[in-house]
Image 1 (cartoon, one colour):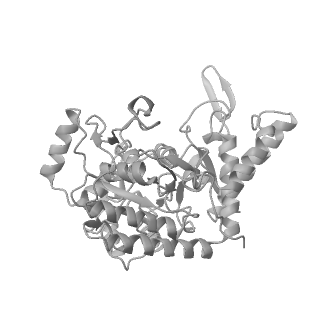
Image 2 (cartoon, helix red, strand yellow):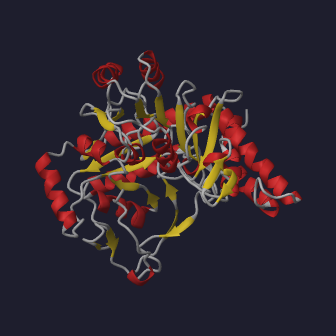
Image 3 (spheres, helix red, strand yellow):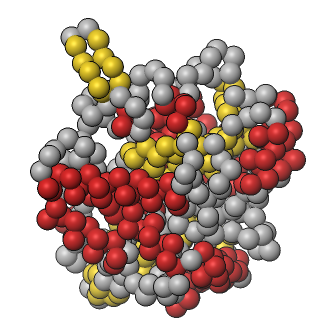
Length: 459
């Protein structure tokens, strides 16, 4: 096996802090996006001179690009344990597009039910609200978990046409007993989609799932490619999610003959570079081996979650410490808004984390224990254009090159904030976005230099 890598592209980059000091950056936001593995960046650089259109050109470069693109598709099938099966891999932008794609393709009938959970990322919640089927939910306990028995009960109560469930939550890192859940669904004749976006870089994909969706940007291939895997038969009839060139055999002004899947599902010029990156990332993860990846992950998860739970004034969200999770931890610091905690970690310590609701609003509402009155008040404020009070938490998440020293740096910084250490500089909140910004003339941090955009807490 290949040893785990020591660094991703950009790890340890020295960045300016708001107090004028430059510090090595500590990236603890892997649950959102990961930087590229060096081997992925090298594979992309080596491919770029050969870049061309795929599936349509007779030239050498086009043939080379097509071979590389299809090799990446084969790698995705292998990574999902589907080599030699009659499933197909559709290459798309990301997990969100993959699930939207599937929601369109399943052709639900009135009266059908899609059963999902309150722990889902919005990518596995919102698409099911657009289909003919009715959504039903599996609730979670106050610690953000649910049991196999909870799933079985809801399967029996709702008789769904599909169970759509996460393989690992992006908020707490909790891992539902996914293989047992799939088995329970299959015993009742219910197919299962697993949102594997958070699972794919950290654990093997469940081979028994009917449908899988995941993204390269969370597994060290940040070039914009995701994967949807499912049975070929689902995609052989009917029009595809996207219509356009490359998806057809014959077109007349009043007729179209769609080609065979998976090409049928990939209209337009695909992201060949993203596919090459995804294939390279898969090869790298396979070379490291799951035992080494999981052992590293468990050490980081233990250190991160126990360390945060031990800090006075810090509330760790999610399951008990003896419950295995990914190296993901969401927390709140008593008396300090989540957006200010994240801002201070960045501006004063060069530690990058995420804050807000992590594109999982229903789940975080439950983890925070918010009442319906509180939610209504926040909704009124947002409608009025004031996001300063949006509830949320801070999330730290580790990756394959995260070190125990970086975890310790976060714990020390959070301990300082929780103990009441005054900010090194003044901060002001922007009520339109809800974010806090240091008041300084230091380059990049000053108002004229600051990047504008949506609130970090939105999702």
